[in-house]
Image 1: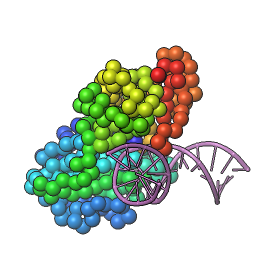
Image 2: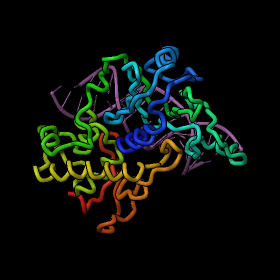
Image 3: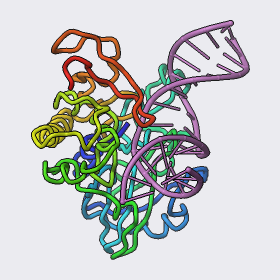
Image 4: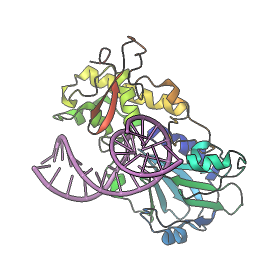
Length: 291
DNA sequence: ATCGTTGCCTGAGGGC
DNA sequence: TGCCCTCAGGCAACGA
C-alpha cells in the first residue's frame, strides 16, 4: 500500500523518465474507473502538454505541465505507476500471471486494471497507471486551482517537528496511532510506517495522543522522519502491489520490525509481536518493549 | 470540534 | 473443484 516513501520513490524514479517529455496520446481504455476528471476531459487537457516536474504532497503526486495546469494523482491502495518496460508479477493478477508464465512479455500489456496510459511524442517508453481496487484518484487542476484534498493536508511527514506533533496531540483523546494516520495532522504516514515508527519510538500505538510527554513527542517526531527516510532509501515496501516504476520491488519490507509480524519474535526482547485493531486498522507492536 | 463508523473495490486465501 | 466468507486499507462522507 503506497504511503509517503512509496510515493516519493515513484516521484524520484519517474522524474527522470517523464520530465521534459511531451504527451502525445492519453489512453483511458475502460470507463469503469472513478476518474475525478472525466476521461474525455483528461485527454483534451493533457494531450500536447509537456511535463515539467513532479511534486509530492503527502501521498499525492502532482505532475506539473507546461501550461501551468497540474495532474493530481493518488495511488490509493493498489495504484501503480510504471513504464512500459517494467516487468513484475505484481503488474498482473494471478490469472494473468499463469498465462504469461510461458511467454513473458517484453513490454507491459495493458489489462482490465490499467486505467490510463500515456504515450509521448518521442515514441519512447509509455507510462501506465494501474489500480485493481480503484481507490486511486486522478484529477486535472487548471492553472492556479487547488483542491480541498490538498488544502486539508497537514505538514508533510518528512518534515514533522516535535512542536507541531505536540500541538496536534493536545487534548486529542484518540490513540497516537490514529493521530499519525490523520492526513490533516501530518501528511504521508500510513498503516505500515505508523506501526514501524511507534515501535522505533518504543511507544504503544493505543496510547492516547494527549498522554505523550514532551520527550516522547520529540522522539516520535524524529523517529517518523527517520523511518520514512530509510524506507525511501530502500525503495519503499513491496508487499502486494507496489513496485517501483521500472517494475522492481522495494526492499523495506525485509526490514519490518513489527508490521505483518504477528506472533513472530521481537528483534529486541524476543517476545511475540501482538496485533490489535485500532481505529479499524490492524496495529502491530511489542507489548514489552513499547510503553 | 472531535470522534467513530460506513462504503467504496477486488483478489487472495481459508474453510467446507 | 468451486462456492462463500473474510480480510486488506486510504479517504470522503456522514452521524453522534
